[in-house]
Image 1: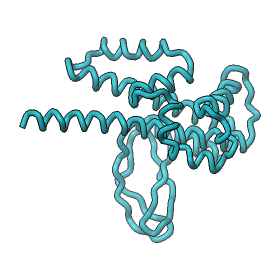
Image 2: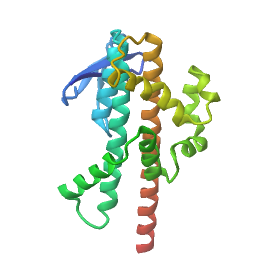
Image 3: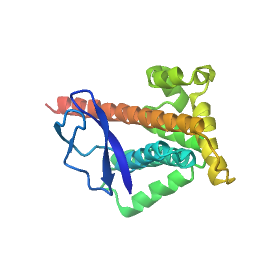
Length: 223
């Protein structure tokens, strides 16, 4: 897979670094000031990042329809990754996960059929809150979306807005063969996919903080 990700130089210039497969470059040169920048391979779901990066590339080249499909795919990839990751971590408190455990976890995920249910499933696993409840307590995560698309602010359920404006567009493409989407459709689709990726990352951080707090308390009780 070929994809790109943005890098910001100390001079303020932001530019794209291109990647092929899983071989991340060790450095890059700023096109403005020509400084050499050392790169660190990103943590987290690299495949999800790659798909979202590819969606951005398709948008830049004018393939609006494919940008929508890839944006939705990136979010679904992130949700599945987080569900598998944290179920494995939970299991590691009692045993080393096996291939059979992974298959059972994957089966659980497949049984959650709809995007709406999957958003709530992941949110509850990571934060103990439904998707909309989490965002009601972390409204700053929607600030950019509300600024760019004011209609999203009047929708009482952020989950519904994401589903209608991103996933239902994707469904019209892959289920009904509609392929003549325009730039404005791709713009909102890519913005929503990026916002969802950031929201899922914030949920992941919440679960990680809980785990770190629990671990610190255990160490303190043992000392």
